[in-house]
Length: 350
Length: 258
Image 1 (tube, one colour):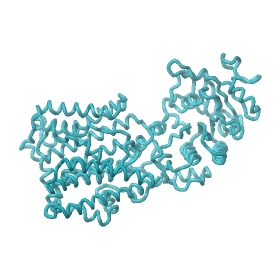
Image 2 (cartoon, each protein chain N blue to C red; image 1 turned 90 degrees about the vertical axis):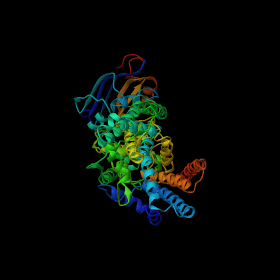
Image 3 (cartoon, rainbow over the protein chains, first blue to last red; image 1 turned 180 degrees about the horizontal axis):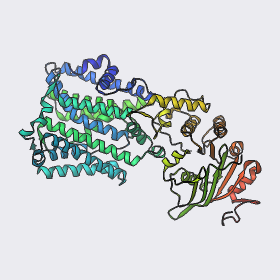
Image 4 (cartoon, one colour; image 1 turned 30 degrees about the vertical axis):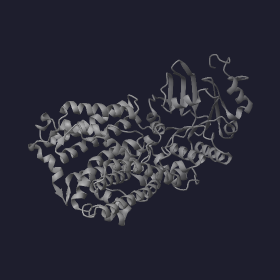
């Protein structure tokens, strides 16, 4: 309970804002309550924060010894960091009117590629760059197929899911590749702690802050909403919708590459089995966070809150030694409830 | 009234696959005037407008702007010259607010980030310049606006950029009586401010109420371009339905253009 929750309960919205803007380099203007959209989603965020607080209370009651410990919070955040970075990219893609099923597979491929003996010979920096380049490249290929090849996003990224996973298996010959001792610097992202938190949690925070800035304060973000909301209007306004769409998938791939670096640091391995079903967790987090699957609406903060809710549920089930099947059922129920509640709040808002 | 046209097209042909939609069309638009573009469904009005706006490339023909021959290869080229189109389906993003829509594709930035304050100020100024008082908040979502308000936003978006030519595609089609009057008043005010306005409309009352000239398309050919004061209601209807009316119009119903 030390890290996240007490602040959330006391001043949820202000805390969100403060956290994001403190991490941001140059926050411009008061973001809270400025836009009508901001107010509506603010109300929706409140629901998510309340849900997260309730889960924390459940954790405190059911696992008083273990839940509120520093080590549990750290492992919770480290787990959230991996899918969290992917969720940021996924939020962009879904707001832009698309979907990316290939994120888990791309992350696996990037982790395998970066841990091959050939790549490891060049040291940890090159490994990280390799993962990011592979991720971005696969994402851009997705985007190219979708925007210029006119493929349906669902199909194109499904193909990438299968193909990237297969390529990862081929490259690794289905073996788990260890990060060698010489490249221990990469693992230090997970072991080195600043103010009690591993470095990779800070990477996650920076990605979230950057994602928020890009989505809310730049032309790219504004146009992402436009492309997702009304692609025809965006085109008539002179926006290059195809190029923008391609860049969105490239961005998602970039996030997968960064997530690959994080998972290599956490597990000290690259493996074709990494990130299995991450796409579903990421999509679910985005949906719970209030982003419409039809595009045009959504927020980074909502997605991250959705992700934290999911992560805390997983954590609670593990701490209480409950069946993982029940955990899946609970997650499924949460998705349904979240979407039903949001539909109601949307109707009352507009 | 008889100045040089700000925008002039000559000999425009345009086909979609085997279907030729525009045949040798000539079209002139004058500053400070409202030119009504009329024609039956499928006469080619929207296609002609999209050619002017750079959405569709023209197969052949010449495009003059302010007396100079230009080549328009995309919406950005047209916008750069000061030609703005307000589309029938309005081309607004429902999920964005008024300011965001008005600046879509041409956002103001300070450094790397969006300059919301300047954009809001400019939008407010433009709406005030058009004497628009019907909009409560500039940060309202477009989805919450009425048809007339949406039309107003779309028109304001078009004049925000020191435009010289504003083309309105059926601006009153979906509006009630009072809102139609408001929009027509706005159209007249644009022309009185010195802009060249092209008004596409099916409604003869609207056409005669605000236009200075009328251009009638018939089956992809320009049947006639006349001054509104020199023609009658029924002559225009004949031009639209038959392509000719007495001395006016195409030489034969479907033959070479005049």
